[in-house]
Amino acid sequence: MGKNNKSTLLKIDNLSISYGVVNALRNISLEINKGEIVTLIGSNGAGKSTLLGSVLAMHSVDNGEVIFCGEDITHLPTERIVASGICLLPEGRGIIPLMTVLENLLLGGYYLNKTDLEKHLKYVYERFPILKKRNKQQAGTLSGGEQQILSIGRGLMSAPKLLMMDEPSLGLAPVMVEELFKIIIDLNKEGYSILLSEQNARKALQCSHRAYLFETGNIILKGTAEEVANDPMVREAYLGMEWRKNP
Amino acid sequence: MNQFALEVFGAQLVNSLAIGSIYAILVVGFNLLLLIGGIFQYAYPHLVVMSMYICWLVLMATNNNRILGILAAILASIVINLATEPLFRPLVKRKASVHTFVLSLGIATIAMDVMNRMINTGRPIAFPPQFSGLQSLVKVGIVTISIGQFLTIFGSIVAMFIFIYMLYRTKQGRAFRAMAQNLFVARVLGIPITRQRILSYAIAGLLGGISAVFFAMTLGSVWSTIADILALKVLVAVLLAGMGNLKGGLISAYIIGIIEGLSLAYLPGDWTNAIVFGFVIAIVIIKPKGLFGLRA
Image (cartoon, rainbow over all chains, first blue to last red; front, side):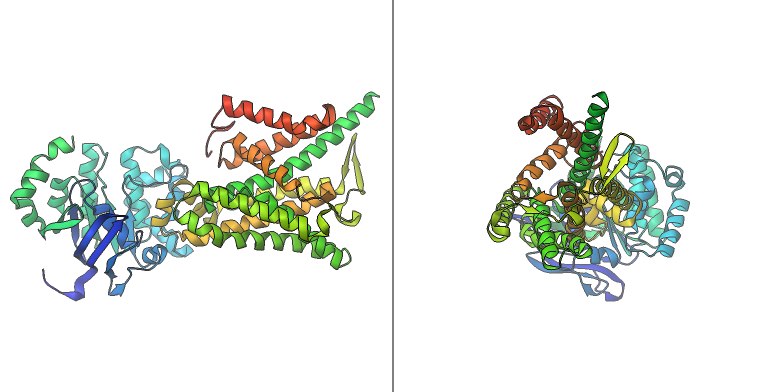
């Protein structure tokens, strides 16, 4: 792991977070370079979601720091971190059900001025025409796949420097999962840096550059996606049994 | 005789609508604090009544300057509501919703005591006729409306319209609705939730101040214990509609105003509250989610 600071986008250093007596994260260090897709794999409750949340300062930190574009954001208010260019697509897609597709998209550009808002909206509509077609429809009435696209579109509204996705493939039909990972790869080709948390380890490792394996709040393995995928433990626990875990 | 009966009915209906309008504003303010502020603000009507007392004090001090009186009521309501925010904040942060109810009960009790002991030696206060507009009557057909009632009904509708426009047509409203539907996602999207919460107290205070002015206009006098009665009515309207249902709350506020006004006119007066609450008990048992369901 080279220490090339020029290309480091996000650096998490020795981060620990606990909920009461439970240690959710223990001295976690990881980094994401510009233009990378980095995947966090691990089972439920391993601390992946907590880590993504902690980047947005959603939890109180015991020790350690989060550096984004060279700036310490560990204790900044969430809204300032979001405004500085980090976007989280929450687990379960997190669309606002009783608002229209358009209103959801506008919320994604909460910090933009009017011209940027319109520009980004046009871009998102061009990228995902389905959202334009459904723009007046209540978001809660969309299908699961459409909701995931809305979630991504809403995330792109702010043109983030770092896109974090929490379990994006969860609960999607297999066809849609294929489509989703295609979108992720395309976004990365367009220049988006992506931090992915996934239980669908096979798919995630196929599309990402590097990966970290989480277990009970610790990183127990890290390396390029290929190295992690070829690790015997990962093969047995996360790839071999995958068809049973994600029917 | 028949003509007279109709006139009484008309007058009662207008009165019911005026009272219902005041309940409606209070219900909106209460729901705003519930959904955005994250608190169960039982003391909201108490703070409104307190603003009426301050309005009265300013009227006394300025030789009945109406403009200053109205400004005082609205400003007082905003300031008092905002002043409670730091008390609620730690409870809201640790999601102790039941505790917010306990805290608001405490605030209500203290507010009552302040009004009882410190203002006008605890006696009811009467607003001067030129403020209340009880005397100036307008006759429309068989219905007689006082200026105060007219302003209350009309002004409340305008206030509601502006509020609903804000909620459904502006960026501010989108932020509020997102917070009400999914606080976690609202935060992830970068909505500054603490600032929005404080703003919800200010808007609830503004609405409370407006209702305080209208209440003074329709009622003409006020006393501290009316706050408890008001609080119960607001609670009833909120429960009737389903907690946090804004539009439903508006409708049930008018329903309660009308039931109350008409039962006051045509049934033994002492039973008004029993009848209103009897109705609510029936609704809560038969339709536990309220007349209009949750969060429409």
